[in-house]
Length: 378
Ligand SMILES: [Zn+2]
Image (cartoon, rainbow, N blue to C red):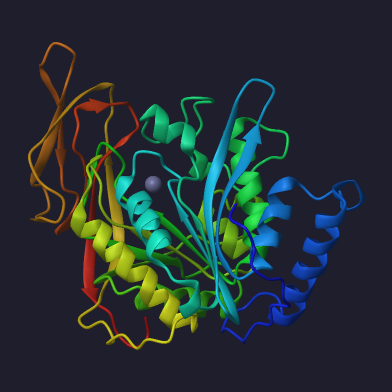
């Protein structure tokens, strides 16, 4: 953590969809930070919360590493907190929930290095790698430590496995500080994803949260937007990072750009620009971006799953237009004999496909979706 130049009361300006009154929240932050700074034993607040509260009580840029451990494993969550000179809302950016999704991780690092606190009214908390074990282990989907998919474990468990504890710290220590959450992904290391898109929960959470999440999904600036149809019937069902935010009444969007385990400069660039657009949308920076034109809605996503463990041979690229019944690829057995044809279930766009051969029974090989122009009712 860098040294702090000053301590001040952070007063916030209203932000649509704010889940807690900002001024009250900021005052609570400061009191808590000062109390915990004096004596940890009195407040009993976890170290993560103390460091975050301190960073949010002092102007400037702060580099944190929040420790996470079990009896057998330990890791940390690298975070940059950029706290502006003026009061305002707080944006939380999550990258690296999946460790082999590199475009979001690189975009978050470049963004954190470049962001100047002098130009901010409010604060940005950037989680560069939520899942450092998966990043260092070069694993797709899951952590090499406990074999679990972090993005299926929210809100996490305080005394669970390493991945469950990471989810718990994010949910319990970082989310309450945020007025909005961006959960940034790409296709995983074995997934070709096109087009790039933002998604929001169109049926989950209170109307204000839905409205603000939707506004953020369009403001991020990508051409395609997915309104998720999942409904929040029980907060414990909110197992994804984004849905866990919505369950706490925090506006949230998912971002998907990049994939295939490569450093995709185009994806990194659009994610970085999207971060700036969201800062402008929230009033954290004073900049006016042109309204995105010709935005489209992706709907009726249909998956083709492999019936067996085998080798996937892909015949298409993500982003291609496909017709009902068209052959997208096939799965062979271990000896190379073709045993399953993957055909498009409908006319549409191939928006995701496995780009590497390993295929497990029940896993998605490809996703075909429909698109239409967004309209004022979206
Ligand atoms: Zn992901």
